Length: 603
Ligand SMILES: [Zn+2]
Image 1 (spheres, rainbow, N blue to C red):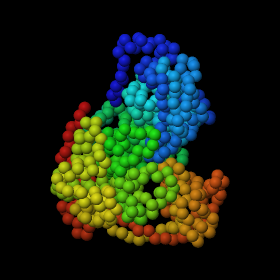
Image 2: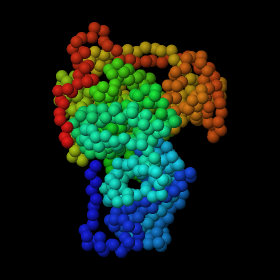
Image 3: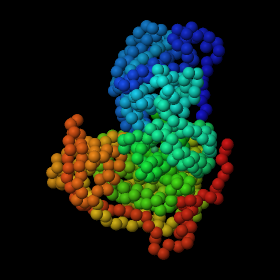
Image 4: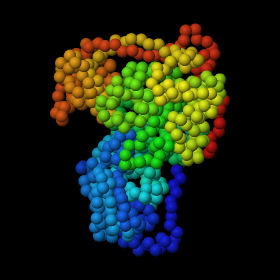
């Protein structure tokens, strides 16, 4: 990581030295953040912002969104806020729910506030007696006009024995960053965590684990992480970093997810995931790590510069998130962490998910990207209302790859697309123009017309003729009808929240048992209802008893009924009849190929 610190010439440093001394010992030219962690029981964080002399009037903004494409209004947690200069109170006028104006701050400003911080997971900010984990944008205001200047941060009053892990550059008693955006793009874990470091392709990797039995986790995860980072850096043939940090929380609850950052990632997974199967751990690790290129550096113009005051709309999430997963799964195949059979099974599930959501005929991949800001509403997540840009985007990435290969006799592939975009945009510090730039890149590489593809499947909602793309590699999509349990209701879940009942089938056993739209499902047959609630229910046989603990207007109820039977279409990728040796060869090239392109990595 290279951080640039803008330093004032010596003369002006001397001129402002007196003022600095009267405030605190920190660099005169930087905004300095102090985070005091004194009150874990009540989850109260105290923030002090010291800003150097400058304009008398300054505006202070707390981001209204971060980490998720959702307005979350973090200012709801600010208990109090005040401003002063050299010990004298300054007027602080509130301009809107997340913005304040300070007057009279010519000689420097100190702002202090107390913020409640208890949202767990990689998209949150949490301080309790076990740890502190912060997405800093959720607790730190920036000063308008000073967002691009260098900043420092230090953490005070941390509990005895607690350490600090963050990709930020250590400096003095704290850390520094080139600007506010870089500061808040650096997750921070402060606790009695465990750490294992290793050197691999590109540089140093730190793996931070917050779990009861960290040693057991390290034994399982370090080797796969090493294989993933080497395979991805090799796939990109690029090292845009020298240090990278993985922060893992293995939690009791079933919620989880990952958040990408330029020099690290924070991932929360249910403990059981490592016991029951490794797939989720591998997929999420490969997905978040690849984000260091895709979205953090190969970044759409529509997300730049970040506007922390309102929604930032981009039609490109199908590429930034979905195609990110396409690559992540390819890399797992090539790293020997996933086999062909499981990969094709996974693709079949993705096709099933898309095809069985009626909204695949009404909402395009681009619309789903723009509508990401609606994902916090349960109704929006219904299969009749929306598709997932992760889901369709991953499939579009596969189709683009297959079509590029088909039109060039395997001379270009998705890998070349990422190399091209990395060279053209990331390395030149330019941003790409959403789907249009992707199309242009693909057409340049494949030397053929992809307009129809983008019109029909990226900005359009036409049915995808799967076999047209898969037959070249000896595969076809088969559809079968399965008898499955019909729960009698639809529930959706927004990221790490509990499932929310959106619709109940009239006269169904669920309806007769008293389930209502708006009920929050807490437990299914005595087990916590989380990310896998749909699989839990699907795991029952028709006729089996279902017992839900739900919360309705804050009151808990227990409801039970016997599940009835229903039908579901299942899509699978299977070998075409009479598969040829050529088709087998082309499939191997698609899944494990690029062997001819092995290049040495820059050191
Ligand atoms: Zn992602």
